[in-house]
Image (tube, rainbow, N blue to C red; front, side):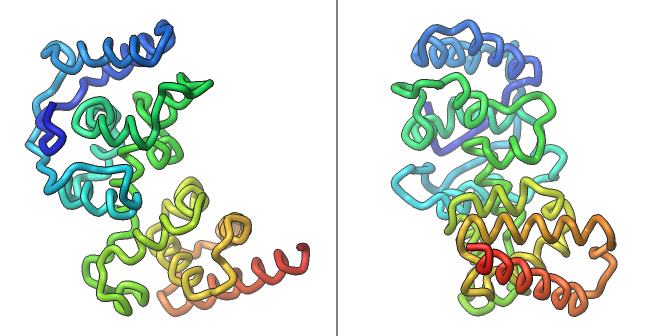
Length: 253
């Protein structure tokens, strides 16, 4: 198995079959063996343009670094196609199998079938939350949503790093989920304003602060079309929300 090149992906029906096999499997090794058989059966595969990695993903490096490696290999593909389950599920069981086995192991896990569903397999029409939980898809989506190729944002400029926000979003547990598993992540302008505001605040690093911020921005979005504001106006509104969210959280604690 080549962990540097991917030229196939599962058909949609294959992903459905994998879920069926998971339900019937008695052990992780039995399940992986069955998916391995599907992975070489042309009836369940589609050919695709080659994805070539400079180096394999590794659980020994930060996920932000893996996200950069994956994003450079896959590229900025259309987001509709990037939400389809065939590519990411295939890569989890094939090209990135060693990474997945090390990072999200199934052996020795009490509820291993649930982990397989959450981290290894995407459903036919995955939600935003499923995409950013899947072991491989989450890496690409995190980079896609935070890549600043033109260095337009403060953190990228300061570090001269197009992936500065990718590193930032992986730096705190649940930051990725709190930012992108909410409607905040559906509007690019709002999302960038939130990220810029949060990385400026020294007191917005904890998961609780991130959750509070995301909640309060959603409340504001329910009454105002923040996406229609210009960049300066939006930044001012988001900064105000952050100051109130963090202030009220500190008072409560």
